[in-house]
Image (cartoon, rainbow, N blue to C red; front, side, top):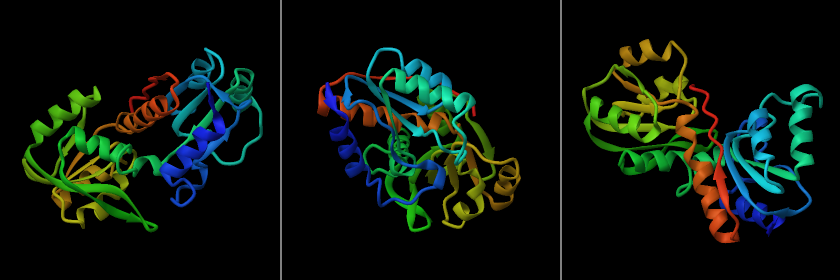
Length: 251
């Protein structure tokens, strides 16, 4: 068993939770405490009701998610929200969420994990959002078909591609999750290919006009790595087991 406070202090410090800006609904950090002892770690992308129900099986633990319980803002403790809280509290399950702090972490983050998977060369932070660089940019040599094959294999999905740019790729801007709506700003950075999770319909024809490839690799699929990596780090440091709850949305 490990102390919840020690794990939370470690995560907050390493992820720079207090200093990284995020959307109001993210509420990064410990979202629900338990009695104080943690015997296992469960990683998942979303703090949804099915995930919490599954994570609650097995006793006292800590659920680490990328998307927490408060994305819809302040709400009454009724319906499914009440059920999530009651199930977690009855099981002595604590919940910790990390959104942008985990996306941008230089070693554990979703961005760097995906960049390493495709062997992006010389990755460097790019795309400023309120003072935070939320993506990575680097060089890459290969064809659209080759990149699609790598992504399909690594992520276990069928990547959707807008072939608006060159067949032979030289540079990639990468932002995991739902950054497809930023296509025009990404193109202004001079990359020929944009790799993200999902985007609005209009991002596709706009990318064609801008001469930019877009690889829509799935919001969920591009954000599974971070929670798994960080859970492994905690497992090793605090000598407790961890597991991953896979609940793909297909989006």
